[in-house]
Length: 154
Image (cartoon, rainbow, N blue to C red; front, side, top):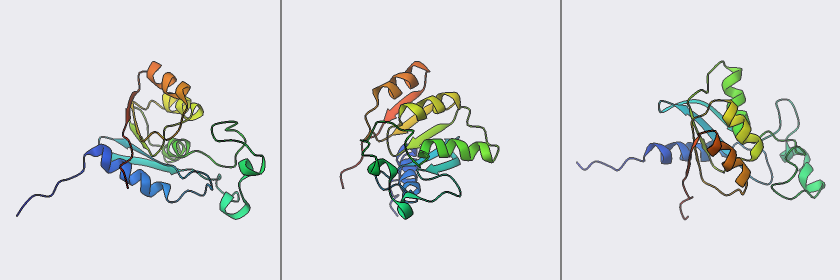
């Protein structure tokens, strides 16, 4: 019997982040994040409205209504970013994020980068698809290992 080829950890957890992203309620961009320590999932998050608030799928996109382009005025949005939700979910259940790895379907923005730094996350593995050089600069300055794994061709 031939051994089948197993995915490496980065591919495995990025595929799980894709699945998490499928729960997103954002009309513009579906993002998933998986927080991992010692090859074990400690929390997940996807982008969407806070608990108890109406989702954009139900009431429409505030950013579209206000004609805000992607990458600008992050605060004018109903949604919480996937990376933020993963960190918040870990905190909600009392799980430390210190020295963890964050797998994300997209490169984080500057707001998420600051949270990633303060959460003690040691490594970020992402697929790019978002342009925020300051976010990368901040994380590199903080000593976070950053790995970009380009998305596979369909």
